[in-house]
Length: 443
Image (spheres, rainbow, N blue to C red):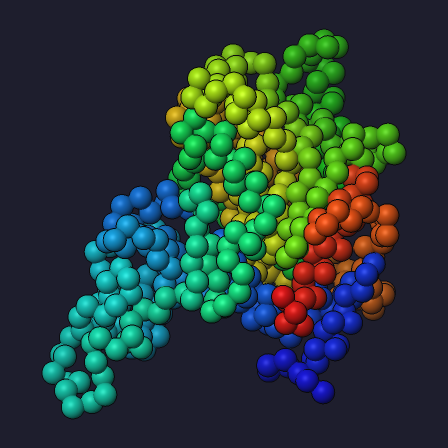
């Protein structure tokens, strides 16, 4: 029986945890399975580590994690973005503890080993003590080690702990359009990170978040009370047909599942490696003066035809498996980082379209502030629900989680599987097919 490193789980046993229309609860709750995920999935896939606008100048850095391993994203003197393991080559201490900053050298506060921004060793105290040993200042083993692969697409930097595998563009495939959609909306064709991010720790497995992103059925059930409150406010303060604030319109969009609901018309496209997207329901375009001024600005910059193409794209979410949810029309990323089988760190980053007014940027922040930031009632609904799911799956009430909805009823279009209705669980089946491939080394 072939087993995975450090566990009693065989490849065959792991493969059997995912079936075409159901998933075993161990996928969410087994600590051994989680540790294997870190090596085989998170340690193989391309993982988002930051945006180049966070490191505009030589020596600028920001820290992140890949599969719980601390890394540094830094701008080297040759202009390249480097990703280094945040581990001193001497005694293993984390060299950088700040979230971001600027440094000509990285200095370890334990024994003073000092590194350049490409990771090479620059200096250390009492160097004479190493004479006559196998130590060498130029030996790569005494450097901050580089992460094996680093690539950037339109400023979004990804890294992989695996020495080989698909190139980033091949890995992202059609989900590249999410990053194009975000950047193309800028008159300058670029975006930049706005300040820092919001961070939350969810007491549930990371996969609940990924599953939830294209799940239209939950919206009108989990978020029903939020929608009811918004409708009550609208009825009390606005005449029928009157223009309402953007945020109030967003909250009222959470409606109960119904065969005739607009949710059923929001079809998903599902790609290799577990990625997916689906159509938007929130109004990314508006008729307010701020939006109209922005759209005219874009037309003047790129031409009417291109501007219309860019503005007509409408994705609610694009999921880049396993680490990202991209809401490109509102310039937002949610970054998932697994900490333990039942603990997940999420970072919410917002981006500014370069060249647009402050007023238009503020408009785009509305979605994050109303729906996705940690203090919103929508996010709190989700966090509690995922916690309930995780707690429930610890019980002996059943071994399997259903992903049956519309199984066998979706459209296979070459390498893309398209849903025929918005409520299909095809995107979850697509994620777990990718999970199974990673975990059995078939990617």
